[in-house]
Image 1 (cartoon, one colour):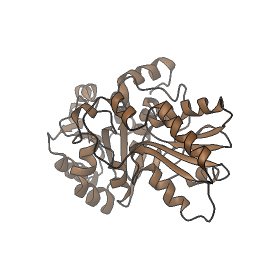
Image 2 (cartoon, rainbow, N blue to C red; image 1 turned 180 degrees about the vertical axis):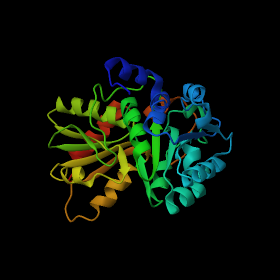
Image 3 (tube, rainbow, N blue to C red; image 1 turned 60 degrees about the horizontal axis):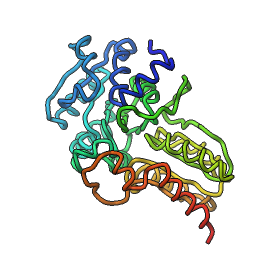
Image 4 (cartoon, rainbow, N blue to C red; image 1 turned 60 degrees about the vertical axis):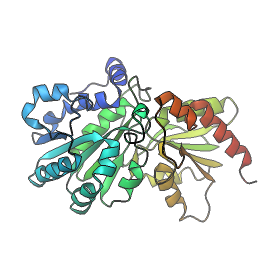
Length: 325
């Protein structure tokens, strides 16, 4: 059984989310003897080399054939197998959109689709490999749960939880190696239930993926200026934890933060929920603007699109000071 020790948590952080998924995958056959994993020629990048060595008969590499991978996963799920399918997030959501819609959405087959290197982390490979519209696509398909872990510890927990989840699920993994740690100790994780990291009264920061760590840092910086923030790790985008969002309605401002397009992601989900209310605080979404991103390093792209801690803080201060004007 996986132990959430300081050493393990630091190791998972160094490996990044894909490596952490591979660590969690080694536990899956112990959870369910019917576990199968498929991958579209990304065994190494899925962190599955050790899994392939130990459980050779439980892993199928379909090659560079992502649509077929979903079809194969669907067939195995139909026969009662507990199937994970792994590929780049951009291919999982766009190249496989029809297969995902029919097999996971319409047929409701319990496939655990793992989208690797989501967001800007593979920026050097260009727009074809970066995925910043995948949540928007997946949210539009009925019957699919969407989870975006905050760090590698949460990636491990989300992977193990996904294996026991009764429906179709899209697990969005993002960030790079040496991923910042949000959770230094064991904690309770439940799909569909956000985690309160800090409680405040002025601004509610609702984040997922790598932006959770940045939200915590920004909240600490704002505290020094007398602005007290609530910080929520909204790891599940669908279904949204509206109970915790309700508790933020007394704040002066709600900010969503995500390494995703400002259209259709976490910000869109929160906005749709708030739109049904007569009164709610102003909402502002921090994310990637509506354009294709040029090839560049991860650090450069975060700076370019305003997703560094200092640029996030600047945006928030500007919105906080201008509210009601």
